[in-house]
Length: 228
Image (cartoon, rainbow, N blue to C red; front, side):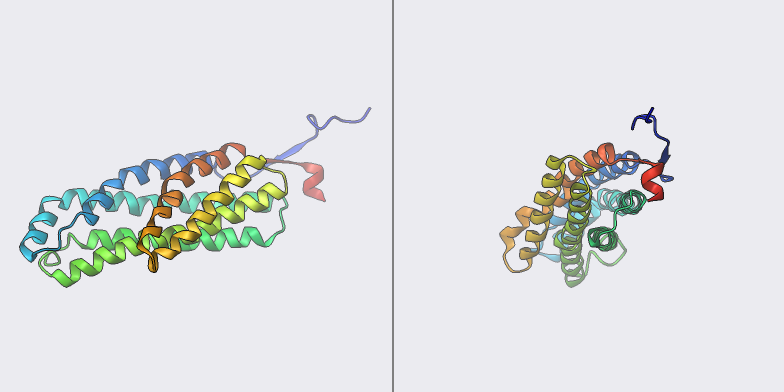
Protein backbone atom coordinates (compact mmCIF):
# COMPACT_ATOMS: atom_id res chain seq x y z
CA UNK A 1 0.00 0.00 0.00
CA UNK A 2 1.38 3.43 -0.95
CA UNK A 3 2.13 5.83 1.83
CA UNK A 4 -0.25 8.79 1.82
CA UNK A 5 1.15 12.33 1.57
CA UNK A 6 -0.11 13.11 5.07
CA UNK A 7 1.98 10.30 6.59
CA UNK A 8 5.19 10.84 4.63
CA UNK A 9 8.14 11.86 6.81
CA UNK A 10 8.66 15.60 6.86
CA UNK A 11 11.56 17.88 7.73
CA UNK A 12 10.97 21.09 9.68
CA UNK A 13 12.85 24.30 8.96
CA UNK A 14 15.34 24.97 11.73
CA UNK A 15 14.63 28.64 12.25
CA UNK A 16 12.48 30.94 14.37
CA UNK A 17 8.76 31.17 13.61
CA UNK A 18 7.98 34.17 11.40
CA UNK A 19 5.01 35.32 13.45
CA UNK A 20 7.03 36.46 16.48
CA UNK A 21 9.29 38.93 14.64
CA UNK A 22 6.32 40.10 12.56
CA UNK A 23 4.28 40.96 15.65
CA UNK A 24 7.28 42.51 17.42
CA UNK A 25 8.00 44.65 14.37
CA UNK A 26 4.34 45.71 14.25
CA UNK A 27 4.32 46.78 17.90
CA UNK A 28 7.52 48.80 17.53
CA UNK A 29 6.37 50.45 14.29
CA UNK A 30 3.24 51.76 15.94
CA UNK A 31 5.27 52.67 19.03
CA UNK A 32 7.47 54.87 16.85
CA UNK A 33 4.61 56.67 15.11
CA UNK A 34 4.90 59.46 17.71
CA UNK A 35 8.36 60.27 16.40
CA UNK A 36 7.02 60.84 12.92
CA UNK A 37 4.39 63.25 14.20
CA UNK A 38 6.80 65.07 16.51
CA UNK A 39 9.66 65.41 14.03
CA UNK A 40 7.55 66.47 11.07
CA UNK A 41 5.69 69.00 13.23
CA UNK A 42 8.87 70.89 14.16
CA UNK A 43 8.22 74.57 13.37
CA UNK A 44 10.71 76.33 11.13
CA UNK A 45 9.65 79.94 11.62
CA UNK A 46 12.19 81.00 14.26
CA UNK A 47 15.12 79.45 16.09
CA UNK A 48 13.53 80.10 19.48
CA UNK A 49 10.37 78.23 18.50
CA UNK A 50 12.37 75.29 17.16
CA UNK A 51 14.44 75.02 20.33
CA UNK A 52 11.38 75.27 22.60
CA UNK A 53 9.46 72.68 20.56
CA UNK A 54 12.27 70.11 20.57
CA UNK A 55 12.84 70.65 24.30
CA UNK A 56 9.14 70.09 25.00
CA UNK A 57 9.00 66.94 22.84
CA UNK A 58 12.47 65.61 23.62
CA UNK A 59 11.30 62.48 25.45
CA UNK A 60 8.70 61.67 22.80
CA UNK A 61 11.29 61.94 20.02
CA UNK A 62 13.83 59.84 21.93
CA UNK A 63 11.42 57.02 22.75
CA UNK A 64 9.94 57.09 19.27
CA UNK A 65 13.42 56.91 17.77
CA UNK A 66 14.19 54.00 20.09
CA UNK A 67 11.11 52.14 18.83
CA UNK A 68 11.93 52.88 15.20
CA UNK A 69 15.55 51.81 15.71
CA UNK A 70 14.45 48.68 17.55
CA UNK A 71 11.93 47.73 14.84
CA UNK A 72 14.83 47.15 12.44
CA UNK A 73 15.92 44.15 14.54
CA UNK A 74 12.75 42.00 14.21
CA UNK A 75 12.47 43.15 10.59
CA UNK A 76 15.97 41.80 10.00
CA UNK A 77 15.04 38.52 11.67
CA UNK A 78 11.91 38.30 9.51
CA UNK A 79 13.82 38.99 6.29
CA UNK A 80 16.58 36.49 7.07
CA UNK A 81 14.13 33.79 8.18
CA UNK A 82 11.80 34.22 5.18
CA UNK A 83 14.71 33.99 2.74
CA UNK A 84 16.17 31.02 4.62
CA UNK A 85 12.81 29.25 4.58
CA UNK A 86 12.46 29.63 0.81
CA UNK A 87 15.93 28.15 0.40
CA UNK A 88 14.84 25.33 2.71
CA UNK A 89 11.79 24.77 0.51
CA UNK A 90 14.18 24.26 -2.41
CA UNK A 91 13.28 27.51 -4.17
CA UNK A 92 15.96 28.39 -6.70
CA UNK A 93 15.06 31.76 -8.17
CA UNK A 94 16.55 35.24 -8.45
CA UNK A 95 13.56 36.61 -6.54
CA UNK A 96 14.91 35.18 -3.29
CA UNK A 97 18.20 37.08 -3.65
CA UNK A 98 16.32 40.22 -4.71
CA UNK A 99 14.22 39.92 -1.55
CA UNK A 100 17.35 39.64 0.60
CA UNK A 101 18.99 42.67 -1.02
CA UNK A 102 15.81 44.73 -0.63
CA UNK A 103 15.38 43.67 2.99
CA UNK A 104 18.95 44.63 3.90
CA UNK A 105 18.54 48.01 2.22
CA UNK A 106 15.28 48.70 4.06
CA UNK A 107 16.83 47.78 7.41
CA UNK A 108 19.78 50.12 6.82
CA UNK A 109 17.49 53.02 5.91
CA UNK A 110 15.28 52.41 8.95
CA UNK A 111 18.29 52.51 11.28
CA UNK A 112 19.56 55.72 9.67
CA UNK A 113 16.14 57.39 9.92
CA UNK A 114 15.88 56.58 13.64
CA UNK A 115 19.39 57.88 14.36
CA UNK A 116 18.74 61.10 12.41
CA UNK A 117 15.57 61.76 14.41
CA UNK A 118 17.30 60.92 17.71
CA UNK A 119 20.15 63.31 16.86
CA UNK A 120 17.68 66.20 17.02
CA UNK A 121 17.61 65.81 20.80
CA UNK A 122 21.40 66.12 21.26
CA UNK A 123 22.64 69.21 23.15
CA UNK A 124 23.17 72.19 20.89
CA UNK A 125 21.37 70.76 17.86
CA UNK A 126 18.00 72.41 18.56
CA UNK A 127 19.59 75.85 18.51
CA UNK A 128 21.23 75.29 15.12
CA UNK A 129 18.51 75.93 12.54
CA UNK A 130 20.46 74.45 9.63
CA UNK A 131 21.22 71.25 11.57
CA UNK A 132 17.55 70.80 12.50
CA UNK A 133 16.45 71.27 8.90
CA UNK A 134 19.04 68.79 7.65
CA UNK A 135 18.26 66.09 10.23
CA UNK A 136 14.53 66.49 9.72
CA UNK A 137 14.95 66.09 5.95
CA UNK A 138 17.26 63.09 6.36
CA UNK A 139 14.90 61.40 8.81
CA UNK A 140 12.02 61.71 6.37
CA UNK A 141 14.02 60.78 3.26
CA UNK A 142 15.51 57.62 4.80
CA UNK A 143 12.40 56.58 6.75
CA UNK A 144 10.04 57.41 3.87
CA UNK A 145 11.01 56.61 0.27
CA UNK A 146 14.46 55.42 1.32
CA UNK A 147 12.86 52.73 3.48
CA UNK A 148 9.82 51.60 1.50
CA UNK A 149 11.44 51.43 -1.95
CA UNK A 150 13.91 48.64 -1.01
CA UNK A 151 11.24 47.10 1.22
CA UNK A 152 9.10 46.82 -1.91
CA UNK A 153 11.81 44.65 -3.47
CA UNK A 154 11.55 42.35 -0.46
CA UNK A 155 7.76 42.13 -0.78
CA UNK A 156 7.98 41.45 -4.50
CA UNK A 157 10.77 38.89 -4.24
CA UNK A 158 9.07 36.80 -1.56
CA UNK A 159 5.57 37.11 -3.02
CA UNK A 160 6.52 36.22 -6.57
CA UNK A 161 8.74 33.24 -5.79
CA UNK A 162 6.54 31.79 -3.04
CA UNK A 163 3.46 32.36 -5.19
CA UNK A 164 4.84 30.81 -8.37
CA UNK A 165 6.02 27.78 -6.39
CA UNK A 166 2.51 27.64 -4.88
CA UNK A 167 3.66 27.89 -1.29
CA UNK A 168 1.23 30.75 -0.60
CA UNK A 169 -2.30 31.48 -1.89
CA UNK A 170 -2.63 33.47 -5.09
CA UNK A 171 -4.39 36.33 -3.29
CA UNK A 172 -1.43 36.78 -0.98
CA UNK A 173 1.00 36.85 -3.91
CA UNK A 174 -1.12 39.51 -5.63
CA UNK A 175 -1.40 41.53 -2.40
CA UNK A 176 2.37 41.47 -1.97
CA UNK A 177 2.95 42.57 -5.56
CA UNK A 178 0.43 45.42 -5.28
CA UNK A 179 2.12 46.67 -2.11
CA UNK A 180 5.51 46.31 -3.80
CA UNK A 181 4.40 48.43 -6.77
CA UNK A 182 3.08 51.10 -4.40
CA UNK A 183 6.41 51.06 -2.57
CA UNK A 184 8.33 51.62 -5.80
CA UNK A 185 6.00 54.47 -6.77
CA UNK A 186 7.01 56.16 -3.51
CA UNK A 187 10.35 56.89 -5.19
CA UNK A 188 8.60 59.69 -7.13
CA UNK A 189 8.42 61.59 -3.83
CA UNK A 190 11.88 62.88 -4.74
CA UNK A 191 10.43 64.82 -7.69
CA UNK A 192 6.70 65.03 -6.87
CA UNK A 193 5.80 65.56 -3.21
CA UNK A 194 2.28 64.12 -3.46
CA UNK A 195 3.79 60.72 -4.29
CA UNK A 196 4.46 60.45 -0.54
CA UNK A 197 0.90 59.06 -0.49
CA UNK A 198 2.42 55.67 -1.37
CA UNK A 199 4.77 55.54 1.63
CA UNK A 200 2.16 54.16 4.11
CA UNK A 201 1.68 51.13 1.86
CA UNK A 202 5.13 49.88 2.81
CA UNK A 203 5.16 51.14 6.37
CA UNK A 204 1.72 50.00 7.49
CA UNK A 205 -0.21 47.96 4.91
CA UNK A 206 2.88 45.83 4.39
CA UNK A 207 2.45 44.64 7.96
CA UNK A 208 -0.73 42.80 6.94
CA UNK A 209 1.25 40.98 4.26
CA UNK A 210 4.03 40.11 6.72
CA UNK A 211 1.62 38.57 9.21
CA UNK A 212 -0.12 36.61 6.43
CA UNK A 213 3.25 35.30 5.19
CA UNK A 214 4.16 34.33 8.74
CA UNK A 215 0.99 32.26 9.01
CA UNK A 216 0.88 30.71 5.54
CA UNK A 217 4.45 30.16 4.30
CA UNK A 218 5.16 26.44 4.88
CA UNK A 219 7.69 25.50 7.53
CA UNK A 220 7.91 21.81 6.61
CA UNK A 221 8.97 19.89 3.54
CA UNK A 222 8.66 16.21 2.73
CA UNK A 223 11.84 14.20 3.09
CA UNK A 224 11.43 13.00 -0.47
CA UNK A 225 11.35 16.55 -1.86
CA UNK A 226 14.30 17.52 0.32
CA UNK A 227 16.37 14.69 -1.10
CA UNK A 228 15.50 15.65 -4.65
